[in-house]
Amino acid sequence: MNHLQTSAAKRGFTLVELIVAMAITIIIVGVLVSVTSIATDTWNRSRSELRASRQAKSMVDAMVRDFEALVVRSGNANEWLSAITEADLPGSAGMSSANASKLIFFTSATDRYDGQIGTTDDLGGDVSCVAYQLDYKDPLTLTGSSDFETFVLNRLLVNPDKTFEKLLGQKDLTDALDGLTEKIEDPVNFVCENIYQFTVTFHVEVVDTTKTPAVWSTVPVTLEANSDDPKDFEEFSILGDKIRTRRANETELQDFVGARRVKAMDVSITVLSDMGIDQLRRRTFSDTQQTEFLAKHSYQYSKLVQLPSM
Image (cartoon, rainbow, N blue to C red; front, side, top):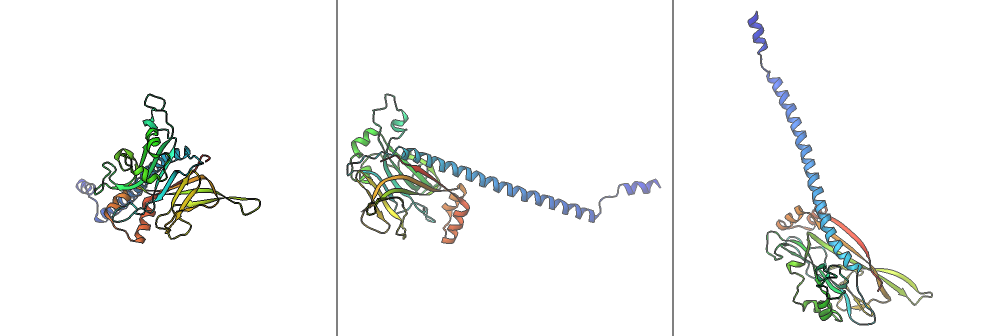
């Protein structure tokens, strides 16, 4: 009798019990893997968006500071601001930037003389020339043909003494800047990376004197590369006595009729995530794939900058 009770107490699990236990375990593991995968994907996306927002803030803050101190002097025919869309857009073999402009203008930059304002390094000047340009290269070496190429935004700051000697009073800022020994593509001019595109829109105040009383309005001027829209422009210049533009697909600069001043500027940028940049280096995209890729791996930011009175 005791032998039978001992045998019953030592009986193991049946096959059915093992199958049920394994099924429950598989379900629990599957749920845990699914939850972990969702959490990891959410964390990666949040991390990418946070890094992208930091990149955007770095670029926008630098540009906003410069434009808030924009310097323009009237009563002359000199060029004070030049904005030209890049005809040859930067990018990889798989996909180029959607839009980019080269900006050159004068400003009272707070970091002139390497930020040593008020010290013996400060030579007394307060008007610097600043230039922005987007490129596609290695952000460390700033050269092409690398496994670490990405979209790189550069900012060239010319100190007031050289600005006064070489750039102020010029009719063409692009040619004058090209004549300097400092180049915007130099490694020291790196600002931030992964900026896929940036578009600038100038809000121009115009007056129609053919009507009584005169009618004032604000006209947006957006710089777009290779655009077929007749409202888009490829070049925008502020001179001391006028504002000049060149529309997309036109060859000659035209005076902006009725233009009085530029009231504000809108900066719109697209930042790619690190994962997106990695795919960009390895893939070639069709139009449909490019749209899907940008929807998944890019973030858009914009900011309106009020410009000082001209």
